[in-house]
Each structure stands twice: as structure tokens, then as C-alpha cells.
Amino acid sequence: MAEWTYKVVSADTEYELKGADLLLDRHPGTEAMQKWLNSEGAEGWELVAFVPAKEVRVTVAQEHFAVFKKLASSVDVQRKADIESERARKQSERAKSAKGR
Image 1: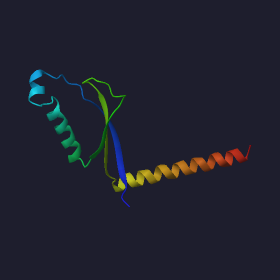
Image 2: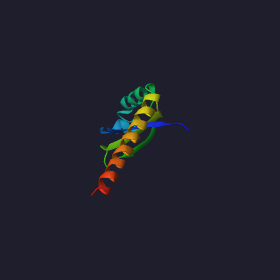
Image 3: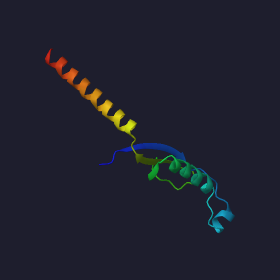
Image 4: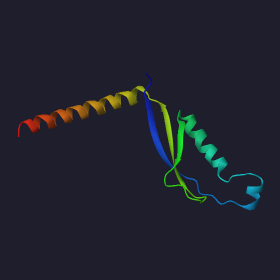
């Protein structure tokens, strides 16, 4: 089974709509967003969700969370195993300490 690494990034999508943009169905910030997404993709990250950080309001400026995933490297898998091992060790120590009271 594949192991995944995830990251969550806060993205501010603030821009100003002008009459010409509305008429031509252009959206300011599109090029910058594409450049950013392409740079994340070049590093192996895949966008899996893009959701408002707060309750949706009728405004143009809004903060979103972009959630990316990529296949975990052997380093990521080892780090996860180390974290799990340390967590189990601490849990065992707490259990022993609780018995000794």
C-alpha cells in the first residue's frame, strides 16, 4: 500500500474585479495561481483539496486552505516509523509509571 505525505498551505485569494474582467470572464490572479500550482507539482505535490478557511461570504477576498499530497519517500516512511516508535515508548513509560503509584 502506498504511503502518502500531506501538507496544508494557507492561500490568500484576494483580488479586485473590474468591469472589463467580468465582461471578458478573466480572473485576476489566475496566472500567479497557475505558476504556484505548477511549482508545487514540479516538486511532486498533487493538489487534492482547495477549501475556504472560514465560512463562505459574498466577498472576493478570501483565505483558503490548499491540501497537497505526494508519495512518501523512504525518509518520510522512516520518520513516521520513528515517531510511532517514540509514541509507543512514551505510552509504555506512562503505563508503568501509573502502575507504580
